[in-house]
Image (cartoon, rainbow, N blue to C red; front, side, top):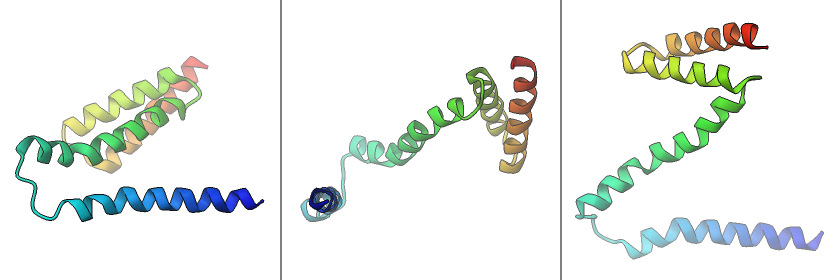
Length: 101
């Protein structure tokens, strides 16, 4: 049981260092356009990397998940509302799983 506290403190320390190091080392605005562009897109890439596998694996059939992903991407590309995209994706999964399973 003592090891659990060691694990918690080590993970807290590493997490703190990762977050505090850029604040200490970078004191002025970043001028490099490439680095600024990279840092701008990091949150979006991280969100997509976490979300994409969940979309495919959340359904009973990966094909239904992929069809819902394609439908949602198409409707979002066309500028539809988030509510309409979510409802359409749910309907696509429901219908696809009726026929696939």
